[in-house]
Length: 96
Image 1 (cartoon, rainbow, N blue to C red):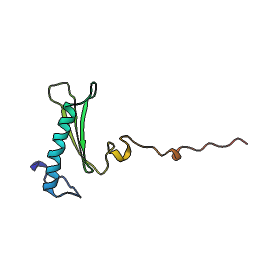
Image 2 (image 1 turned 90 degrees about the vertical axis):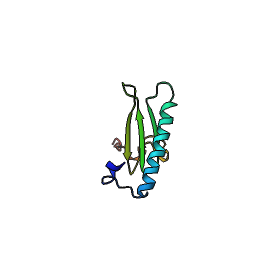
Image 3 (image 1 turned 60 degrees about the vertical axis):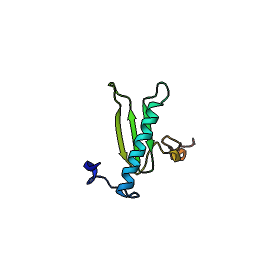
Image 4 (image 1 turned 120 degrees about the vertical axis):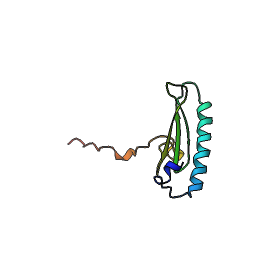
């Protein structure tokens, strides 16, 4: 964590709260990774500011990605996927 002291800004958490959140999310991501369904490659844990993802690798140990985000595409408010506004499509011209 010390290597990040000068590089990470978390607007809603103190440094101690950020460290606690990362530790808690890593534990959750490990549990999600270890208990993932057949064919699944990832274990993901997140809160509003941090997303941690463990991904299956060719070796024995998984890859670990930590994202410090303002928005997560995995957020439940978005239904777990990117949402496209159905009204934003191109309009068709009516025939004359």
